[in-house]
Amino acid sequence: MSVHLLMSAGRGPRECAWALAELLRRLEGDAVRHEVTTRRAETVPGERPGTYRSVLVEISGAGAEAFAASWTGTLCWQAPSPYRTGIGRKNWYVTARPCEVDAPRTTFVEADVDVVACRTGGPGGQHRNKASTAVRATHRPSGIVVVVDTEREFGLNRGIAMRLLRQRLERRDEAAGRAVDVARWRIHDELVRGDPVRTERPEPSGRDQPRRKAVRRTGGD
Image (cartoon, rainbow, N blue to C red):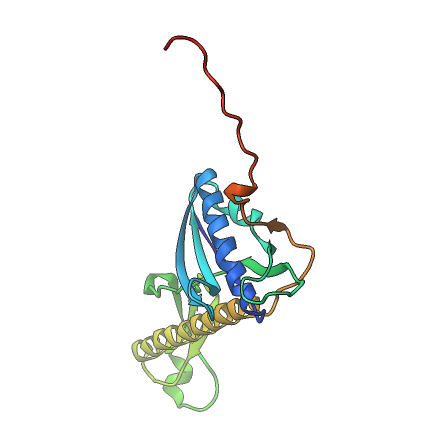
């Protein structure tokens, strides 16, 4: 299975875009250790080279959902700003949320439609009142129902009913697609600074790591 995780610097300063790039690399390294696969599906570059305002990460593998959950929420990159000297702030926040990429599309199949002939009242002449020329069509997967009695022939009303069902399903799918887009863009404004689920820091440089003592060998090698 696969999960999409949207990482966003929101409306934060350029340091947040830098922090996102650093956190992304940390996430990708963590994914290798957890034996899941990551792919940068979409990227929006930041103000500086190598930084990102947002990245959509596709996570695949048996443990994709649990791994994504471990990186979901507010993330903090703790390091001095690489752009502004003398600034005291060291915490730069990024948000990461699972999201839908595309709304599922409905495949219209006439076999999924129950068609029932019925009579309707009102004007239309003696033929319409006596014959069951109207159509009641129900699309079972969605529950959408249409009733058509505009024509005096059952076959014509059936064709109109099928066309109306297709149109209503297309409009429903379009609305669902817009809702997915709105939900994704809303993530950019949901960044909460503070109380991060993860705080990551740069790895210590070589000169900061303790030196190993040399071992003097004795003997006649």
